[in-house]
Amino acid sequence: MNLTTETSTQQIQSMDIKTQMQLEAHEKECMMFRELVHGKLDELGKRMWRLEAMIMGSTLLVVAMVVTVVIGK
Image (cartoon, rainbow, N blue to C red):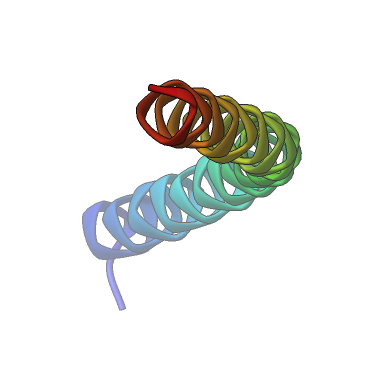
């Protein structure tokens, strides 16, 4: 093997290692971001459930008031 081929092979291996390290760092960042997003979505889900319950309760209250007014006449 000549010197040029060895140098070229070492450069490729060095680039492969660097690329692998960058990929692993990117995967870690993505995992952290994914966990953050899932936590936020869980919080939003709980808020949405509460809002739906409040809307249903308000609707029932309005319907009950309308029925009371109609029956009262």
